[in-house]
Length: 88
View 1 (cartoon, rainbow, N blue to C red):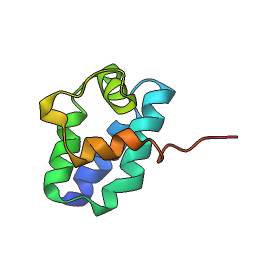
View 2 (view 1 turned 120 degrees about the vertical axis):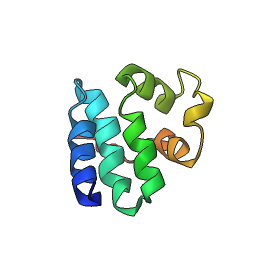
View 3 (view 1 turned 45 degrees about the horizontal axis):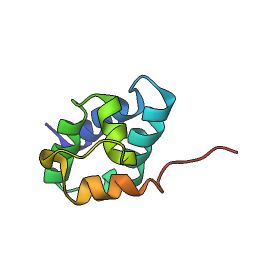
């Protein structure tokens, strides 16, 4: 599949998770970093989208241990949380 089409589909999935909190965390992460991702990183994120929101959010904020499958630089970057836009 074409890279641009994959990224458009992933962006939609990242921003339509079901709760505003998940949308901001996952969608914000996608918007901030996806332009620089390699194909392997796109594969990682695509697989992550199959996980439950509560799991992803728990891993990102540190309330749930990150399973070995998801350990690595992509999850570490997600855990910084500085990419989430905060409305005032």
